Amino acid sequence: MANTSTKDKAKEGMEHMQQGAQHMAEAAKSGAQNLADTARSAAQNVGEKAKQAGEFVRDKADQGASNVGKGMESLAGTIRDRGPQEGLLGKATTGVAGALDQTGRYLDEQGVSGMVDDLTGLIRNHPLPAILVGVGIGFMLARLTTSSRS
Image 1 (cartoon, rainbow, N blue to C red):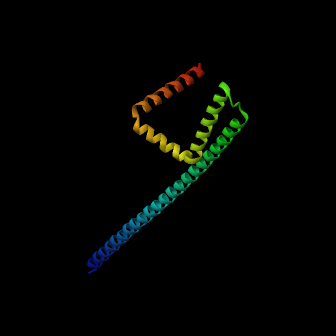
Image 2 (cartoon, rainbow, N blue to C red):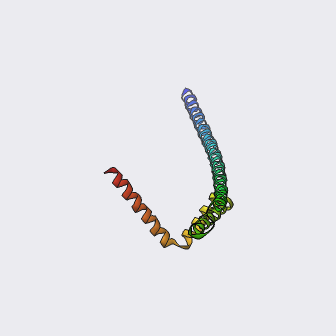
Image 3 (cartoon, helix red, strand yellow):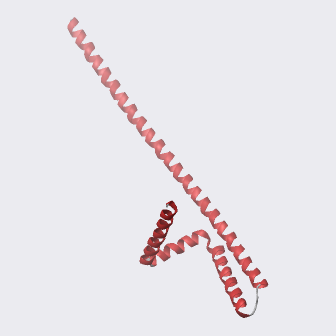
């Protein structure tokens, strides 16, 4: 009888161990799910903050471009008012003032976002010249950096 009691207790002990292991596995699974949910939530928060920061920077850049544009338009008016009106210098004054005025208006209306959109469209419409310009700029930068090291 003692033998049966020992076997029953051993069996009962094994069942408790299995139940304990099952509870531990469930707790680990639940903890892992909670950790995954927390990580997912943190990643969403970081993504949202990055998006907000990007929008803030874009808005500030657009405001800065608009201010520069207004300054260029003002400078164009000053050049027109104070520069020569006739002859070769008058034509040059009119050309410079017109270019400043047009560029200033573009910056004021489009901002940095508009310039990026225009540049993107230009590259899409003319990919080969864009690649060649990029290669040329890269070559010039490489020459400048290697000649400054010598």
